[in-house]
Length: 523
Image: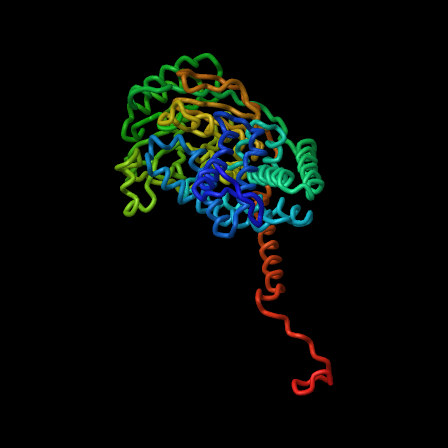
């Protein structure tokens, strides 16, 4: 591989080699997520891509580098979808990667050439803001949702969790990209190193100040919750029987709530009163309500729903939450008339499931209020925030990653509960059918042990409850609005500078004195 020196610095000589390098550089941040979980690597993982894009010979090349880098990132973070979506995952990654094309242009505009120290400091604010806009757009549920946000890689770092309580995962994404940008400039441009080191010190000081002085949840009581994880079983009936046996074994352990995973009940309880009766007897045996998840065609409405249903000693309590945000291709196919062919190349949904219309907060006999989420809804910061604003004291995500055993998916999914707990200041339970099941306290710290993908067991957790309102719950995604403002100011300033610059190739007109005329210049 040969290098040549261009106007903006070193660039790869071959377009094919450069494209491959962009794909690889974009994929590097995936190592910061579970299962590798090299959280520290997130702070340097973007440096190769930043250096590559800043050396682009032109705007088109920068956009192409950004697109390929984004495609590599999406493929690496979601590679475990390959068995389900087959070659379609490559198509999706390529389409979503287009979101990074404008970011590539932004990187070249701010980092290219030989920027001054002031412009380098501007880049440390502008480049992360551009990245955050990409994360915001792709977080739309129809585009796959906010899985793999760069800030989510910091789920086990206490200072980062404190930042999330202030500005959500969005604020941590800004921090991570800002550090990468400053390090890239330190590597590429010696004359701005002092400014960049200063920027890194400011990032560290702000993080430390938030860690020490940001408001923390106040402890208030506890709840004893049992998570039932049946493990990999052959069919819905066997799964129900296994969950039933594991729950019965909890008798005498004084639990307040038993939580089953997603799709733990394969028949509508209204249509199968025998199953409802079995669950009611279980509730009597353990002395606690059971939160199950029904994945079935409803008897009272058309279509298939995924629903969290609370069952007590007398049967279903009437408290029910229907999943609102469905997994694209897994639970429905967007624009099925155009993309329905995806069912022929992978395990895409043969029939679209129906959506719920509102979140639900359920009150237990102990008067504790819980907010259920289903599956990848735990990836959406706004849903857990909404539940807490409605009074939820405990967040619960019922999930199933049984299709992705042996991949990075179960660990990635389990880590998301730590983010939602830290953001909202409320503990969270992540209960699955086949692992990984996990519980986190109101600070995002782990409670007890994970139930791994090899476990078929139940686990009881004493979960400390908390009160208080985090800045994120109060003010929401303010970090996103700040990033939008930064980009707006930058674009306005660049536009004004362009208008002031004389058009290339147009000679400036000489000024005339008051006594000059075309016929007699100088008079």
